[in-house]
Length: 411
Image (cartoon, rainbow, N blue to C red; front, side, top):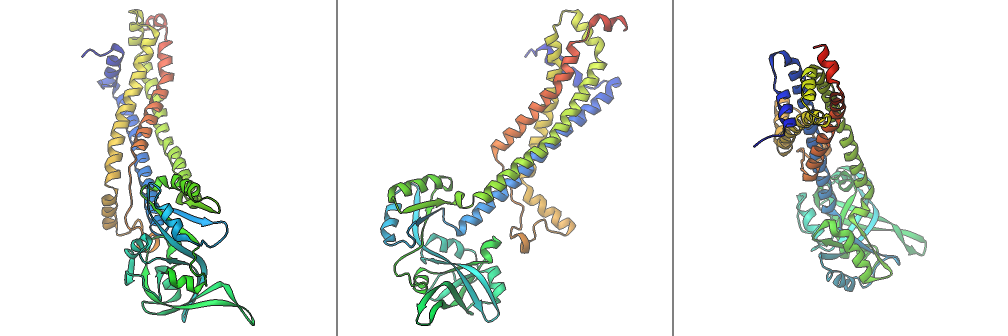
């Protein structure tokens, strides 16, 4: 296959000759710079994607995909609402929920908490049951599931008694009296989210309804959907189906600030690490400028033989693109290799140096997570190639403006 002569000459420029070894070394440094920048971007974004996915998984393991509430307060006739919700395409289940803030006490400690009254058959119970560290995985009447950190604060173990106190008091001849109810600790669970593990209490729905004197009413209906990213659409459909006074909130809306912060952090990291590629692009400018000075005589000969200015420009644009392509390819391969094996690599480093990147008692995630997003890889490669071509514009312009008469006169 015949190559365009501009590309052929650019390839010749990249091949080292004895008197051009220095330029060849600098070219190799440029390629290495682009490769390191691309590799760093791929690995860092993959790890950040991994943390975001882990965070979503932990949040959704104890939270509904969509919460249905009423502007009028507790929901009456929630069973009919559940049946209607379950007819919406994409909905897996709809379960009753009573959610209230309480104070919980034991003989050894006291703390604030969030009490969730749920049906023993709800998907939430099955998912948290899989994270039970001690106790039974079935939610039975009179028992309470306690988060691991909250259990430490209260200094309680399985079968210990705790008292739950509600600020929503009940009327009494002598005034308002706080509501209290004694529970037995049936299980201690760990979700991996400190906020949940230090505040969350789970009890059977009927027990909580009785405790709050709610009768057959609930505060929320929690909905699970097949595709978590369709939760917002499902929430709008629920509002249309049930009408006033019902309204729905999806998990993205309820955790909007958290995920907005994660997205902002990804953008900032992308910009900062792109500067590594930009530095390599500046090196390309220097390398090609030196090449132009070294090849002044050859450029003048090409011009005198009839080569137009645009062909001279294309030679150095091709050269910049080739440097960027080789660096991007090596960086992409290296980045993907690291990203797909980051857990094993991190474990090896931990064994060699005797420390943990993510101590389990602090982060709850003992392995470095990694999720490669194909669009991230494509974007990184495109940015690296674009910067490489832009870096070649000045040397290409300088080469095309050389006057062959002036150059050959002094050669």
